[in-house]
Image (cartoon, rainbow, N blue to C red; front, side, top):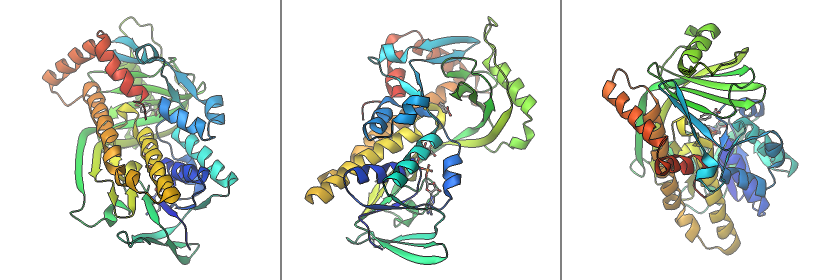
Length: 390
Ligand code: APR
Ligand code: PHB
């Protein structure tokens, strides 16, 4: 088989890249290891930056997003039993975030590719890339029991942190930077009315908590736990009890509404970056190149920023044969990647419990008091949270 851009991975990065290229008349094939059902049901985060919403809207993917997405103008930081609202819009010239589940974005992208005759192969196996330093790189794979080889001009490695593309780059060509955190998140989805109009990030002596939502009927809540926590040791009663404790306010005004939990899982928190994000004709994008802890709600948005820049470079290459944008791809992306890495590490450091380190806790409270009382500090949080212009 032959195509212009071979894309490994049908997560938000791979699917959006295929869509953006299609709009510019560039052919691509997406190879995905899992089934369509799996990638459409995989529960992930759900906060879209303003720039992400604008890009999806400008490229014809805004209908359901604007119908079902929830626009938020603020976020709450809660500590020592008191809530403090950060007015994101007032501090950023009106910019907002939109609550819309990542799997909804994936569903919209797959539907658009299908509508536009896109080529996505689900449930492929034995994917292997080769010839990365030639002008005809290839992707070998097995689909429906048949071996195939996809000959490409360029390969986009959008296969996530555990994919095959990054490890296919010879040792010594890449530099890895990482930080693991001594905790994880236990996340639930429950059928309950949200107990607040906006997201609540909590610093509590028993550990971090986050109150988020998916719709007026479905809430998404998180609790800091051990990185290898056994979710089976958490009954629904225990989860609600701990959420009540960590989200409680000293004035007693806040009431957390419970409901049937229909999804729960534990995820470790890590920060990871690989440099450069390119090797020959292989370009890494999204989680294949970088991971952020979920505290800043940046994973999806950073993947979108990568593929927007990659598609611009590919449009230039296939349009005019020039490759200066592609040659600058890694440097340009990494500038945003490290900004987002810093913001996500900062939010994580400010809001989580680090064992019994009382000095750290005092520093956190001082920082939270500063961020919630100084316009300058609140603006820093707000402009990073809604997303710096793409
Ligand atoms: N062959 C084919 N597909 C693969 C392979 C492989 N060897 N390995 C992984 N994949 C697929 C995965 O099944 C997944 O569907 O690549 C896709 C990668 O998608 P994501 O992990 O969602 O990564 P990305 O598209 O970069 O999106 C980043 O996802 O994890 C969240 O928080 C993260 O929000 C961020 C977003
Ligand atoms: C979510 O809604 O899943 C969510 C929101 C904010 C975060 C992380 C996850 O920081």
